[in-house]
Length: 202
Length: 202
Image 1 (cartoon, chains in turn purple, cyan):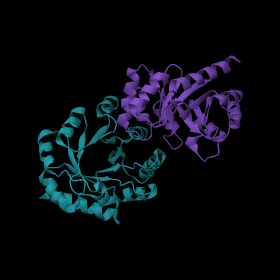
Image 2 (cartoon, chains in turn blue, orange; image 1 turned 180 degrees about the vertical axis):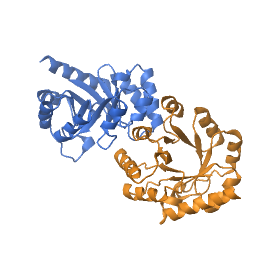
Image 3 (cartoon, rainbow over the protein chains, first blue to last red; image 1 turned 45 degrees about the vertical axis):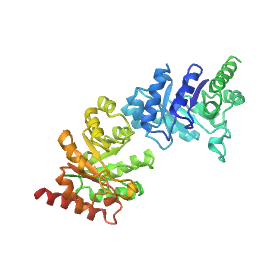
Image 4 (cartoon, rainbow over the protein chains, first blue to last red; image 1 turned 90 degrees about the horizontal axis):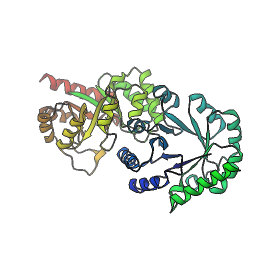
């Protein structure tokens, strides 16, 4: 099971860079999802991460394909109303592309369009989707039967949710506030890492 | 003198498409600047424009280089805190790139970075920059002495501003609300077109 940290759009670029550099060795991916930052701020962040030794292969850019292309970041995560996967794959076949989905149907469609992974959510209640009923983790069982691409789970994932997510065979988890809103992002990321690996051993 | 219409982010995609298709033969460029629309909406708009016979060469995409690349639009306008011109030129030398500037210094910097035109403003008082003192049109005189690339003027441009703008040798004008907020966008665009061409004859 892989661990993706997703930025929470609540910190300055320098705070964020420091947090990401702290956790870089215990996460598989960091998705940069800073919707209210300017393009120049995101580019500055990427330069800070490069200086801090964060590998480009670990970075996923949310939405802005152009930033990924200019900064040689090989991974892009496309939101539901974002760029069309098919066109992106046709133009830039070297990129690894993820897509957010909320149902099996949308996940199958995303696979047909050529995505490399889907990010399914939201699984559990979470402050970032307050008042919205979670979709639960049962659909992951069907996705794992019908899809060939990895399925990542997102939304309200805490340490004690890793076991049930392993049981439905999720390939990875994506954690936002659980890491970036924590006082000690490294300690939390480390806990996720250990829980995932203990689970792996079982 | 060229005429660029800049969309005002105040209409639905279908209204906007209809307005642009109406004015397509009397403007040199249409800059798509719809900051609150989703990427999918902008792509839908571009498809409507294609169906309506608007040439891609006339379309300029604001900010989103990725949309321009995927939709084969050859012109991109980069805002002040947008993508770095130099990197964009290095990666995609075939694109025509414009940049917004507010001073001679920034215009010279933009030229050094390789832009194909600058859009200087705001020239006159305008509702879209309410309460902000305009920069005037005098700097255009120096820009035209020191720059090789075309200088477009933007901000509060009405028909009676075309004469003074010709006098300072602006290469083009960019009009937003003057066209898109008008009840009859075609009539207004036509007036600008005629005023520009009458001036040309003088």
